[in-house]
Amino acid sequence: MPFSFPIPDFDMLLKLHQDDPEAFEALRTRLLQNAVDAAPPERRNSLERLLGRIEAARSRATPQQAAIQAFEMMADSLQELRLSWQQACFAISELQTQVLLQRLR
Figure 1 (cartoon, helix red, strand yellow):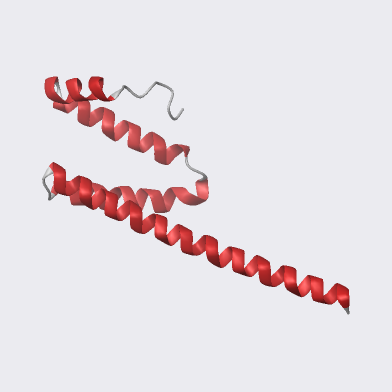
Figure 2 (cartoon, rainbow, N blue to C red; figure 1 turned 180 degrees about the horizontal axis):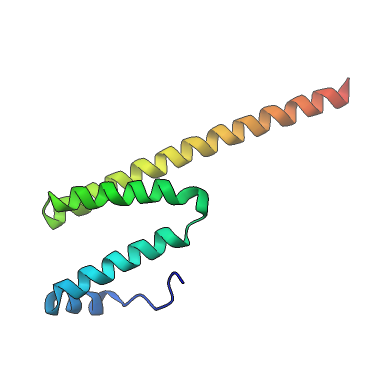
């Protein structure tokens, strides 16, 4: 079951990262996979691809570069979602206009 345990606060995560980097990495991986698993089924494939791109970028970058790249990828994904939403709103407005015009005739 996704997110069946609480996410530790920042200080606990920092301590875990300092004391046991392998455990921190395992927790990070598990939390990310839980987030993907908790997403609606129609979004999971795109989230898996995004996560794969983020992980590939992380493997070739410093931690700071990886954070910046992940942020940029997520911002790009958000922009795509925003554009899709705008297109859907436009299509609905167009349909509503057509229905209203039909009723007025």
